[in-house]
Image (cartoon, rainbow, N blue to C red; front, side, top):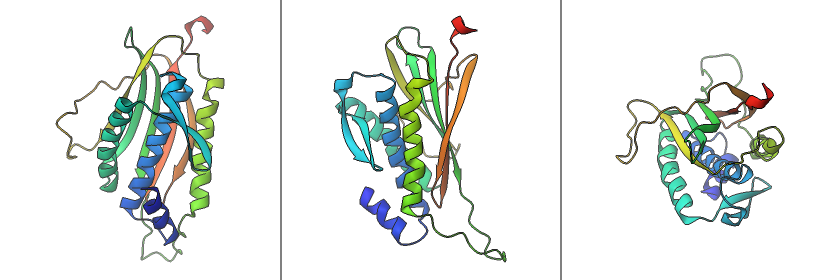
Length: 212
């Protein structure tokens, strides 16, 4: 997957399908990084992999890995046909089921330049520029421990995917509550874009009532 995506970047503007691979790969590594940085699973359940010029912690728990891969298969297909607009990672208390954090990634299709316009077409985005944008997001995820409240209870997580009504949804998927957080604080993170997609990130978290 990585080799194919890199090849797409070096030959000019990437296709929607090539962009879908890049964005899906970002989601896979991004979710893993959040799960590690927020302590959702023990440190022993992760291992370091080199990606985007960074050391990123990814799960070695086969059940979690299988769960994420299954979701990302559908996400990539929907990205390739423009039928997904948002992906959310919700961190929930195991005991109360309350949502403590909500990492949201908004997805937009980058509009093609109008061929009838006199304006010159935008040049293809370089691999270096794309990598630097993605690196900035991962650095913010790593730095999130400095501004997000400490999670002191055992947690689990859910992945929510906002797809168009006519998207072909696997039979094992179910509709879900949006898992919003009451009285949430929000922090907007960096964004990145390929030639076909733009991804904007933010995290919402439960306000510490003791500080209100």
